[in-house]
Length: 435
Image (cartoon, rainbow, N blue to C red):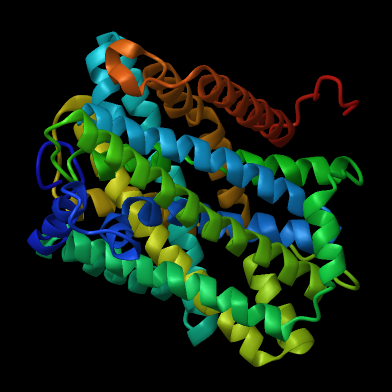
């Protein structure tokens, strides 16, 4: 937003710290801290309200048995976010810009249109999630919760004018709130840790209903806007002058991706564990955020229910901020122009207000948003695998044989499961599954 199609510039203090690391004058743990930021921001996509709903369904319906899916999905997320970050560092361009540079013009306009629709669908789930949390926690109407969420989100977006490092710290604080909330939830719940270990280590699929949940977990793993955004977060963060410096940035970026996505994965596992401990034994039908809140009060107490809502609000606000940033970058990258951030915010949250104003079922709207994302997901995934596998684009940092194969397999798994989700949602037969 600040320069080119990149998301923003760092403060002078952070830039100087990174330059010291590249020059070898700053080592140890202190060397890693200035590089924290891009992956933390991108990790918000893996802790949005859509993940809350899916993880609650997994834990309530199937206990700890689907934790292995969360682990596998998180490994795929690490791979693709790492590739996106590397793309920005190596080329100095983000994924949307590179698509515009390397693909036919007509295809670019189609990719942009689908990606814009996906950005709105993403924000529908994120924005409504935050609004639902506020409405339940403070006893306000849903529309009032939406207005508060809109104001808070826009206020956070204004922080970028004071340097993008401040934005990274604010979003990092919200991620910390989500994480600490689920640490607290585990103390409230009576967790069967042996069952947790079995669920993580031993793949199992109890029935076809579990397959639907698996599709929901994996299908929401690599979010289109997160793949686009991560390359923009790294493309101009630190100017480099030599191949050695570029290789160092890629190395630190990979470490940050592993750390940030590991934390996001643990938070998702904690969501499943909490739902399994609280709901599976007698309330396996729980599958929505508001239902989970109302059930937590008698089961684990009002404190546990309030902590749950705090995490939902932090998730909704942070992911809505990130979604707006991604939407701005997608437009600027694909078609080369940008709009004021308040206009972008209005456009991405407009569908949410329409849904509520028309009295539509919020849960049905969230399901529809996931179907839209299923249509849009192939665009960034396939483009990322293609571009990072081209030596003409990546030079010496082109994907190695095994990395490229892993990316193709990961993309195949996610896209196949998204197809299952799409077919099942619209009621079409699922080949080979007998339904």
